[in-house]
Length: 334
Ligand SMILES: NC(=O)c1ccc[n+]([C@@H]2O[C@H](COP(=O)([O-])OP(=O)(O)OC[C@H]3O[C@@H](n4cnc5c(N)ncnc54)[C@H](OP(=O)(O)O)[C@@H]3O)[C@@H](O)[C@H]2O)c1
Image (cartoon, rainbow, N blue to C red; front, side, top):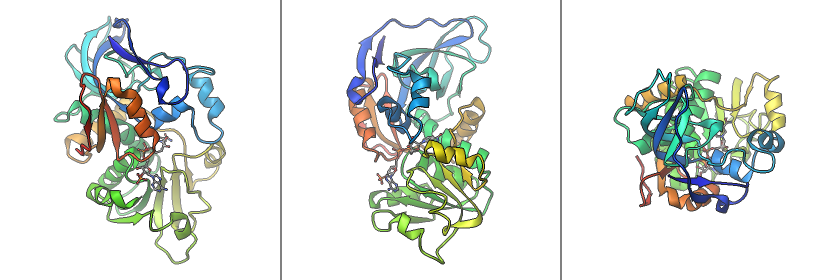
C-alpha cells in the first residue's frame, strides 16, 4: 500500500511517499481503508516541533526524543472498515467510520489498523468522507473547551480570536448551537465566512489591533474569550472580560497552563478525543448545526505541498488529504 513516512522532525520535506505492506488487524482491531485525512495546525507543529513555550521537551518525550517514534504520521481519518480481527464487537465490515488515531498516528496511508476502543465512530449520515474528516480537529476542540470546560449557556457572549481557522470556524458553530452571542476576530478576507458561520459581529484584526482594544476603558465585555492565536493573556484581557469572565487559551505556554490550575478565570489544557464527543459532533453535522469549512483538498502524493500550505498559518478552516484522489481541488467551501 501507499503511505507517507517520516524518519526525522523538520520542514515539510521530511515527509516521503513510500510503499509498505498492508497491515493485518490483530485481536480487537479493525482494518480501515482510509478515504481522507487532514493536515492540521497540530500536525505541522509536531512535525517541526514548533510547540508553545515550555512544551518542547514534554512533546519530544511523548512522540520520540530524537526522531518520531511512529513511522507513518497522520491522525484524523474517514474511511470504510475492510476487515476485522477477533473479538471486535462495535464494528462490522463495510461500516463507514470517522475519528482520530491520536498519538498512534498512521492515517497518512491507504490502510490502517486501529483498536476498536480508540476515538472513532460511524461517520455522520449525509456527509462526504472529506466533510466528515474536516470536522474532527476543530469540532472536538470546540466541544471540549466550549461545552465541556466552559459550559457556555444560552445568552452568554464570546469573543473568538482566530475565528477563520479550523478551531475558530468550528467554535463559532458550537457556540452558536449552545446559544451564545458571538464576535469573531479575523482578517478582512474572512469577514464574510465568519459571519456566514454565525458570528453577529466581526473585528478585523488588520484594522483594529486587538491588544490595543483591550487597553481601552468602557469597551464591550464578554463572558468568554477563546484565543486560538496565542497573542492574548488574562491580564491583557481584563478590560474586555466581564467580572466572572473566562479566557480560554488553547495555544498557551507551560507557565500559563500551570497558572490555569489555580485561576478559575483561565481555561487551558489539551482537547480530549472520545467516542462520546465524536457522536456529539456527528449529531451536529447531521442536524445541519456544523458545516465543516474546507479550504483545500490535496492528494496523498502532494503531502509536502499540503504541509507547506498549512505551515503558513492562514488556512480557512481545514485542509484535507484525499487518499485515493490524484486531483487537488482548491477553494472548496462546504
Ligand atoms: N489546546 C488544544 O487542545 C488545541 C487543540 C487544537 C488546536 N490548538 C492550537 O490552536 C491553534 C489554532 O489552531 P487552528 O487549527 O485553528 O489553526 P489554523 O486553522 O491554522 O488557523 C489559524 C487562524 O488564525 C488566524 N490568525 C492568524 N493571525 C491572527 C491574528 N493576529 N489575529 C486573529 N487571527 C489570526 C488565521 O486567519 P488569517 O488568515 O485571517 O490571518 C487563521 O485562520 C494552533 O496553534 C493549534 O496548535 C490547541
